[in-house]
Length: 323
Ligand code: F6P
Image (tube, rainbow, N blue to C red; front, side, top):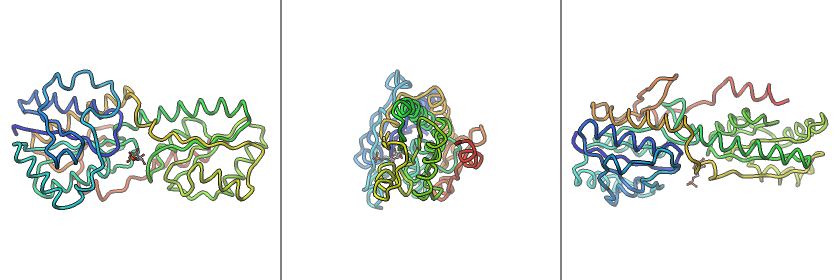
């Protein structure tokens, strides 16, 4: 392989830059010319490529976001779009592609692979909902941002005797809510995976109030049946408010834009480097990830069909520890 390209796609995740840097420098150290594709699959379709040297990826390991840019590209969902992307790659003499991203990005990677183009995926999304890696790039940073916010919100909630509903990202997956809720000592956690009736939740919060706690923190996953504001509204409309005053805070994109933690820099570095090594060695059509603490490769067709469950122990513990 003489020319290898890297792209980042979907929601950006802290640690993506570490993965780009590691992939580029690993490729270069194997004598391969490295290319960056700008703006994800849109850039692939437009032929937005630039050759990258070692210095082009200098001083990016500590930065959040992705220096290559990212996009959600509807055109790439069409066959014509994907064929045009392949023509662009082949036209530029690029013989392999590393795709750093989550579910949607790896679905695109698997489509290119099934069209005969060498692709390797790198597990990267703050949602941690990607099958084939126990942990994905960006999760640790997003969790720490959420945790910081929860700690701060607990302080002001206590001062005012309030119940604070904190909404965290995660799309349809409750991983960020579950783990930040447990680490933040939340009184309740609302997940898409576990049906929670608002009445039941209100009763629980009332119970917390009656036990004399100065605050109640409820971490709500954005993908739950009712989001944070939805729950507050339901409580108001159904007269379910307890002794606390209720407020909601949506963390949103704040979780995505932070500088990567040490864990995410190391994970990005490990996976980015492994992706370059795998594709150069001829192991294509796989996702590189971490399984039981070890580097793993999983076929992309298995990845896109798989469903990752929430960690069972933490799911059980959430109930037991919120007292
Ligand atoms: O997949 C990462 C993520 O941040 C989700 O948690 C969130 O639901 C979604 O992306 C937001 O997408 P967009 O950036 O397109 O608004």
